[in-house]
Length: 251
Image (cartoon, rainbow, N blue to C red):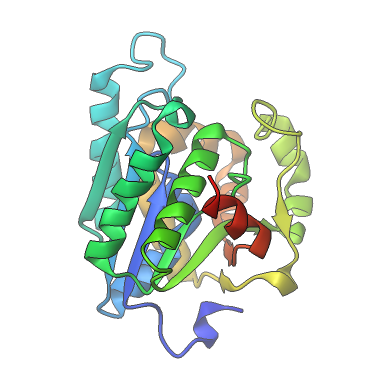
């Protein structure tokens, strides 16, 4: 269902992500709709993304992490979001973190913010990235222990989106490093929430992503602007399955 069919966007939105730019790619339009309607948005980011570079001199350094934090805050400012929480965990090492402690940290934010809607990765992490999958587990656990406040939705991509961009994904090796070589997808009929971006929303999302310059300039140039805009023009979410919730409850 498209969010435009809902009476109103959530009043209090919480997004929990692994790295700076996850939030913009997966939920920029959703965040913008909440702030446009006078609601509040809180973003939790587990790491500063200090390993998000091929530059050997900057890779994994606190200095590069600081750059990415500045980019994150500037990107969110484009969307009217100022409540940013950074857990400060090492990029690329989230599965090694104390899962109960991190679920507790997310639970503390849920208890404080009392969100109507929590969005994060599904257990597949969309790209099978281990950091993404760890954050999904923490957030699901936190939502459970805080009494399932509001709705919990997982970011996903539709079957149609994956098919239409399959050649592009193969060319850039998006799923090669961590998973089975293909994305986990959801049929459009099984989505809980889909944001169909207006031209103005797409332009704002592009501006927000441009603020993540260390991450987006290269990929946008590789894709070409027209293809890049088509690639970011979808935000889709699904509910957890019973099995996923059960797995999260017993971790």
